[in-house]
Image: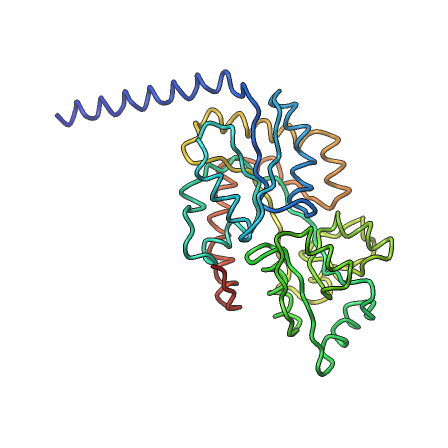
Length: 326
């Protein structure tokens, strides 16, 4: 009986593999929806729109970007996890996906169990920026200003559990700053209030901050992580300024719902690789401070390994800083 069951299981697996291969041959035959976990105006949306044309060309199919903000990127992830595993729904997400596993206690999905990683995209340069009317012109002056008696500093961020929120918690801890954190539904709304002077400081993507700093509409004090950025020439990184713990990465990856056939995952991965090799994408990424992952790290397995490593790492940050979600 056990032999029959084994044969039946083997036959079923073979049938599923054949079905997946067959579907991959005709895939994609209709438009693909790419969920972006944060609203327009931030780094996540910028990356999606940079890779969209080349990814469409590689797949010979339309890709529709749908921004699904809220709950630190968890609403988009929840919707993507529940989507049909047929390759027609993919998700662009970031560090917040890993952080959400600790931050939110009532999630309807598991980042590891409910997704098939497609591949890693990039690390992104971010900077500690301030409203244009803030009197400090460098990090030393900012720290002096921030620590004056009675100072109430408002730190805007893209939402609880977002990279901006986690990074600002680490930065404030490392710099010894006491702030009032002001959450928004994405980087775009946070930026609007920073420009208007409604909040004092925020973590802003380099590609977004650079033209605003040059135009005198923002001030920038240091780059998060260890990557310099030509768009903000002369601006030092936090590690260069002596804050070694602030060498943190802002990564992005593509994922699909669990159960998406491996041949389709492979086809999406190949399209992502072709996209990242596109000269126009490479130039736009370089100009925006987006550092693509090396080719040998663009496998689904490498993306899965990174996600699994990041969950406990961000979990420690969240617990140490008493960050609460929902």
